[in-house]
Image (cartoon, rainbow, N blue to C red; front, side, top):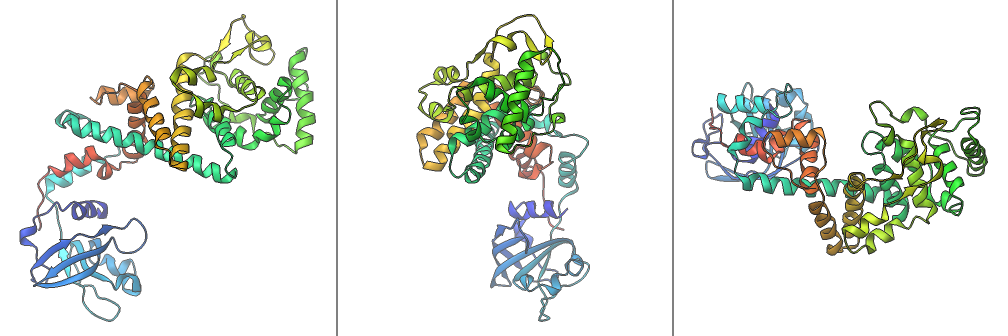
Length: 428
């Protein structure tokens, strides 16, 4: 329950008029201090007054006062700076290493507050706040959704900056990885990313004038080519031979073919056609990042990703299996996903990297203009009363689900905070 105690302390959810230490001295909180998320005392730089004498230092919290020794704080000089020990049960006094007793405050909460907290963080439901959503004002929800959308973009941006450092500032290489990942459309995103990171773009650019060699690179490195499979399929045999040469030339090791998932996928969403489309982008020179940055509007961005496959892939979903002929293009909803998961993060990350607010604003405007994603997370939040009208909002509820609801971090969620802060608090 230490996290709950930290929450109560941080947000001052207690009666300030009746504070006394365990030895009867009058206590006044001047500054609660700053929550510490690393090792060391729970709050840094607090300021308190005890019987009129002002103390500045740190605050440590425990369920029971005896936890101080159990955690070996009495042997750690870092805890000599503690000026107040806040506990729920004061079962023993605690001392600094020099023998000085540290003032102790008993901080307890009402049974109703504890019950509300335990209900919120219950592992039986990831959204136990759902019945109370309607009680919150629209401003609370809209502000939180806006913050969550930015939080998600910033998280994705940080990941792209990590890749940028790894690839020595090459934005096209980073673009290649993030676009590849987006082509996995969720279920195969990790496999597409693994493939892209195992096959540098610069290798394929050396052979970009040959579409068949680029295809051989991708299908072979994906682990989808094997000698002797698909007898009688000339296209497949050519790719096998091409990849054998390229694999030896560049010292490549393909990823495990078991990385790819097919269960419950419609044939049109099998990774093979997505890989063929990725090959088209690379065959065209793969200057996607520069084109994305130069695009003036959403329609121009969409045109970048409108690729139509011809030949073999108009009659195949898999190698060696003929299907009725049909045109093969990325549909509008598929392009939406690429724009949401690749283009917007790229624009935002680049804007943050070079200090270009126009780029970051373009990323936000793009998400606001796109239709919301259709998935179980978005539907669930819509059902409990959180309106989702565009991709900015659908990204926000995905962030809320993944980073707060699923991890039961209700204390750090504005919805949970609003609901909890209304509960009556008191000191025991």
